[in-house]
Image 1 (cartoon, rainbow, N blue to C red):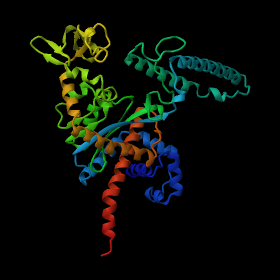
Image 2 (cartoon, rainbow, N blue to C red; image 1 turned 45 degrees about the vertical axis):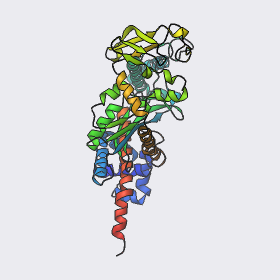
Image 3 (spheres, rainbow, N blue to C red; image 1 turned 30 degrees about the vertical axis):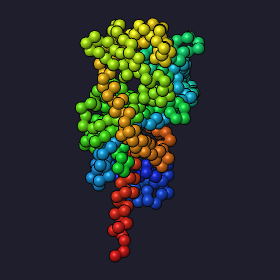
Image 4 (cartoon, helix red, strand yellow; image 1 turned 90 degrees about the horizontal axis):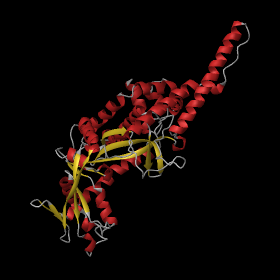
Length: 441
């Protein structure tokens, strides 16, 4: 098994990722033949081996991190966390509930016809007549039905989590919001917006140390966004590398009040930009009237806008989807006659601000992110983590995931990250040491 794992890593390091190409390499590539000890497994054997050892890939990746820490390539000064969208199947072949239901009906009709033919063949066999052959197009009808049922179950699961809203894309035929769409070959894959359009696949997460760009934690999730991955990725770093870095940087996709509250007591200084800061740059005239600039008077429980107008308590709401969080709403009744009406608000009933229990935390974090130190950290974040994804795609051939299903795809992601780390260790430690050892005296 150990040799087979070494082979899996070696082929990833040389862009030979498919089992069929590995089968060819076992017959033609001399270094690969030496590594295999003369064995020549076929692609089916290699595929079965990978499937049987999916759970071992995370441990394999963890070993590469431990080696990198041991040789001094990880200094725990700064970690950069980010996600990349990786396709696994074609978006053009995703199906909704309506298409799946029609396909299921066709599959059931084909199965019924097939069962009738089987019965007729049994009658002919009893009469010693030559039996007919099963039509090729019906041979996989039962398997197709099972896949369709799995896809429908996945749609049911997503619809239970989905928030129906009128602003979503509408079906031109029914006028209702479009439901989720899945791919028969990989129902667990999700539709995500990437740099080159929409893809159906998974979100590959990676945490990278700034010293030598070693991946210290990794995960693969069926999620189109990074918003819920901050806390799990910090836990992955602790589990894989042993401890967190002094500073951790993430992009705006990870930002939320819930995340900042959850990591407030972690032994790392977290830098993650608030998307509101981005809107500040695009619309500077609105920024002076952001609620951060409204001063609160605890004695009267009112807020003062930058122009000195009072906002009094109007009402409060409860966000049940966020743990019954109470939101207090304050409203100004003097906006219509204010010279800045139209800049602060266009609502004729007056400006409203919504104050939640985490607003003070968000305000402090926005002030922190406005400093020069934070800007420098965010520039460094880009230089640390983005090249890693580029190397995985261009040098290790990660154009798309070859395995289907979340667990198989996650194992493939761990294997690729392990191969990336070994390349780093080889280039920065082992190869220079070997050159020094072979240098003539």
